[in-house]
Image (tube, rainbow, N blue to C red; front, side):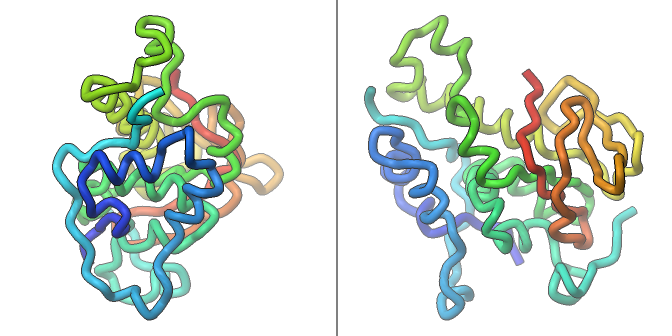
Amino acid sequence: MRFTPYLVFAPTAAVAFAQLFDPLHRTASDIQQQLQPQPADHAQIPLAKPVRGLGPAMPPSGASQADSPANAGGGSSVMLSDVMGRDKSINLFAGFLRSIESPSQRLDDPARNTTVLAPLNSAIENLPRKPWEDPKDYSALGANAYEGKDGQGRAQRNLRRFVEAHLIPTSPWPAGEKIKPVGGDTEVWWEEKDGVKRIQPGDIEVVSVGSTVVNGEVWILKGVWNDS
């Protein structure tokens, strides 16, 4: 099964991004509702492949593991790309990931194992700014930092950095093993405290391991990893 975006990303990039992320009209809960999986009777409708270069939404103006049948639903060909949208508690992050081609391709590649650190929707909603916003851009360019073609490209790069900072390029990931994320310069590791996995630095709680499949695992985080 290929890792494909929701139908909301199938229209032109400008329309799709404006509908999904326009902060003047969309709230975090609106985005969450829009990114929820399709009803069961539509689950098998073929979706469009990711569009090359498709980036985040911007305001238009203003040694792999075997599958776990309980989690992965069966055979050894199940990939991370197949399971990312199953848990509604992380569908904001899953939607961001789907909108960017390179991370999407990685999760559909059996040769590249990955531990996905997927923040809960509530963790993303509680961020002081949108995942594609960078205070440095506002300082340098002002309130219009994400307007126009250049602004959309800037936001795409920021969102890709946010997503890739939550992708660990190994699985299984042993406790204490320090490694840089796919997108990031700071080494991260995890340790267990009182029976709970915690990502370091930052002491971010791992709520659960949501899925274990042929090319990695999805770890659901109570917070957001910040590599800035």
